[in-house]
Image (tube, rainbow, N blue to C red; front, side, top):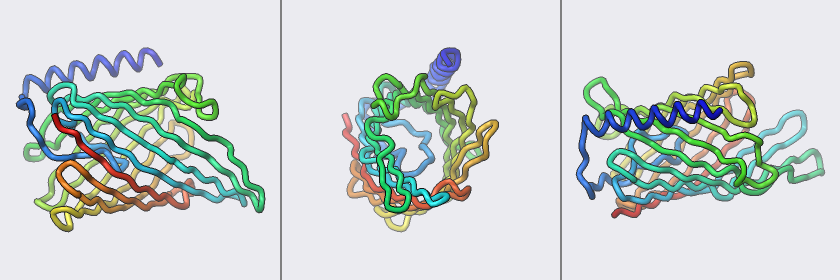
Length: 265
């Protein structure tokens, strides 16, 4: 695990150096709010230099299998992003959750509290040009010692993903992610993917639909879909809502809502 962390960190630094040589973004440039929620697909774009951005919301999922209903209530799923350098951001994430199980009239809470704190970074690698998409790289570590007892693994989780986006026309575009993660006290790698399509209904309202999932090396692959609406109140404040379900029998319902707020320099 430590080797994975070191290799990914060195890779990010080398990519950032190359990105700085290829494109320079002036200080104080405001590009408008571009978020990593509510889609499972992360954007390849970092927040502007010296800008704070808060992305937060709630999430509910449910699944019924062999008479047992399992529910997840994510009361607070928050990501804080800061533009440390041009085209490079630092990321801090946390969540407060509760897992419930219901069988007949029997109801129980099987886990509650803080999930592992996430720390990470994003670097922009290339800008869209012709067939070449926007490209970014995200890395993240989940710190187990800052989690509640019910959600505390024994090892540090590590993940990375490449993020891509293509402009189709003035109103629509696609984005997709490819990556891998090591988590849940398992040395087994899990490959992850996302594919999202977005369409601007008006200047302020847009809709999206996406497929996402993962491929463990040994276990069955998991596939999901979701769709939602995004409303831009102003250039720095965005609202979102999402509904989805699983395609592999892993999830019956997903509901999510939240907002994102950018605090420019």
